Length: 605
Image 1 (cartoon, rainbow, N blue to C red):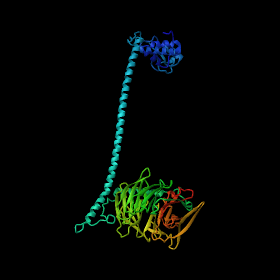
Image 2: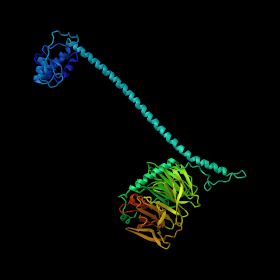
Image 3: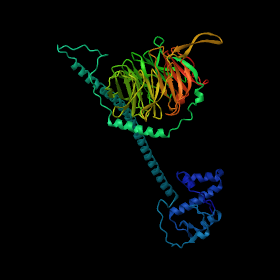
């Protein structure tokens, strides 16, 4: 058509398809010949077109040859030109040589061509029909995509609605569980009231006057410590015992040399001036938060790092005798002389809400101790009973009464492994209980006066008990006392503090005074092991820190800290994380922090 004897090929049929689809495509080659497109590309397009038409027309070539590699039939003169210039197959693009070409003999009878392939307009019409079919198929696919999008949108809406319904049902379930737990706690109370009412009927048909505070309630029904709870306690004991054998003293523990240099870092007035006195201290090690229970019937949660009060918990009507954090979670426990125990739960804003008020005791609650599982706790009271509680529900599982005639319990603590409970009585006796059977398995005697505090060492071998006369150390393996620490002589005064009476910049004038260790008849002692079991802290007329030894080795006093409250009565002591500081409560309203100089938290609030 253009007078070219040999036409080179292009790399594909894109040009052919592009120029032959529209009906006006005959005008496009003229545009190419006018110089707007390189002539080489025009030649490649035309040779491709020739090969394409020869393939679809069905016309027999004049000199047919076939490729050994692809099996495609070519016109000999055209394929020779193609191989000489490009060296590859015009259809497949694979490398091709003349050795790969085999001549083929063809008959003279030619199959007649169809109407569509007999002419260029017919082929254009065929291409137009294919194009129309492709457009229809594309339109159908778009409709299917639109339908799929609508179905997906509807499914997402249903999923969102289902999630909201599930959240509402979970909330209702939790509320129902809470109401059920409260109902279970109230059932024994109703049974107790019914028994009391029946027993109060007199012979003349009138009921006796009942005193809710002093009257003895009827015997309450307790579900008891179930087999599943005993299994949980036993598994916890086995795990902790195994871990304790491999446990090493942490390298971050404060050394003896550091404790010898401890001095007061800060003092914080947390409780009311009208009713001074801190009776109990506990520390939540994970957050470095200190809690105190005071004579003013409040418990204060204090952030040591910032020097700020996090929350003041009010609700008890009498002095708070014991405070305890639950190691895992946000629960906090307080016991009071008003005969109640309160379970508090912390929130993200730092406030604490009272979840349960437990009224199972009939006398002052003297001690609260948390089990190692952090799911249960025990309270001890002057009513001569101790109660085993479920923490989440606040249900009293068992209330154990001492058959011997005593004046009640003055202290209590769990053994680190959780299967043994130690209690101190007002009659100078220490009793050891098997938690699983609630049986008294051992007694330690020798103190004079109420046992004000007891503490188990971390290794589980030693028990330290404090009373008005002394501190005694007991070997739990042999159940005997192996050491007694007589701290104060009746005639020996102790330096109990300093009195700040004025400032004259840059000097501070102080006046020390002396107080007799036996001058106050209500004088008490407190004893506490640190978390690693390496140190023992004792609070009394002053604060003393002992290095923990063994049955035969000495327990040496490595530091004596004065009671700076001016009262001569340090009531409680607690070691901070890794014994890096010591928190002390006294019969004034201040919480005092002792540590290394230079590690000061914010000073006096």
